[in-house]
Length: 346
Image (tube, rainbow, N blue to C red; front, side, top):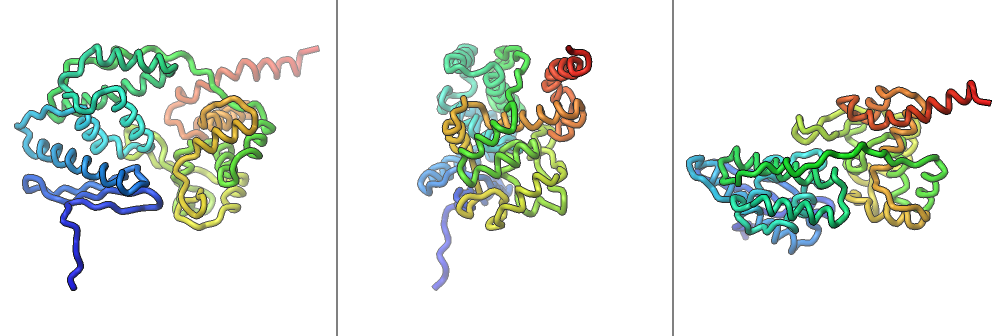
């Protein structure tokens, strides 16, 4: 008997534990191919996402293939356009997807983008402040909204006459949070789940973002170096850099079983998130909650305290500009004071 094929112009493919969407069709004579993650592990949720995204993609493709047609997008369609053309190619696409999802909680997805008002933006900012969100966090959301409007304007979508960036506030000088000593880090590790322990160590040793660590594949490792993607809006999907593997990092890697294409796994499956594991480890250690990014700050801070070399820290963190790394320079006063007192103190 001939094999039956789905009549739908899209299909779901499971990779690891997550369903991925693949769309193959033609719109106004032009071939359309879209591949992206649904970010869903449940089949029904993935099917709902697929149906919704297919409708969005077709709508957007019809518009793009007919530039004379002025489209009045809903907010949901505008978010979908941004995700398809820009967001999914970010080096940390999961974070972008979560931000877009959070925005839909504040703005009615069915609302026409052209009807968005200053009052809508103001209410959003007030709601975020009421939640206790930092200025920097609110600014990131506003920057994304601005980018969405700019993209839609380029695609000749009907957009409101708004300058979202006017709502952005100056950010206070960042007070870098880091762990004081190895004893604190070891306390966290001893209270962490077994599959999470090597991730904490690798973060401290490498200074890499957790997202980059979880994305690390065995195929990325070449001898005593490995390739990682770091955030850089100038490059699609981020900027690829090569990082040296030092002995402590090598020790962690050598302790891991190669049961998956990804380096860090749990029950032979790729680890997608460690936020809950981090929260539990801190609670069991009796420590106040801090973000996972504190591990990266700790790497940079300890490195700077030992070397006093901001350029070395910049290279270790893969920052393109030393200005990004200068937030660690506030430690210089304390370092210089300790050195001065070791020489001249009585």
